[in-house]
Length: 191
Ligand SMILES: C[S@@+](CC[C@H](N)C(=O)[O-])C[C@H]1O[C@@H](n2cnc3c(N)ncnc32)[C@H](O)[C@@H]1O
Image 1: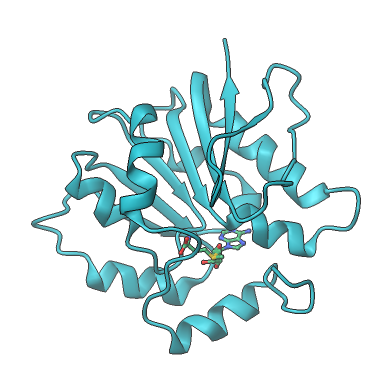
Image 2: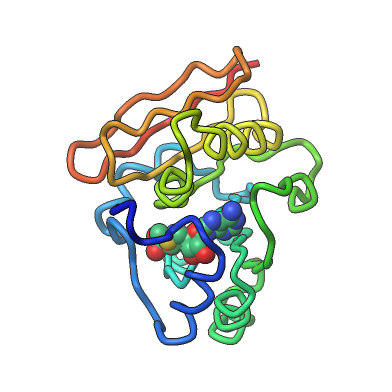
């Protein structure tokens, strides 16, 4: 992502979502499915952060993972996605307007932590706004790991094979590249 475009600013996204109905960043479900499915559990909620107007939540639900909790800080895209959701077909899909850097615990329905948190290019946005200290990425990492249960995973899908934003929590085993085209960076959080 070019540093000249303010991908880290909420105003940029709100303005963009006034005009844009759908844009799927990096990769769509047929590419992602074989990579992420080994980590998904049919009966457990999935936290999807920085959802935008992606169809990922519907795609995962259609593949047997019905409880997807979507968060994005642009209220207009959340409103639109709510309107697009057929609640009879997708009764467990949730949409929440919130800044992921303000904490994620309130979205955890079990209070036990999520077994899977997924972001597709949210980290790339934060990297655009970061100075060299990676403060925003570290902040997000700490919030994600605070709602990830032991042995849970954070699937972070990034355009950058260089993306490296280890959280400050020393128990996190760090990042592993999982895929060559759209890099999938996987963070494991052991007990
Ligand atoms: C590059 S887009 C990716 C959208 C979607 N995940 C996809 O793959 O098509 C990044 C999204 O993250 C959202 N976002 C950026 N920073 C955020 C933050 N701090 N909290 C919540 N959402 C954020 C933006 O509004 C935007 O929808």
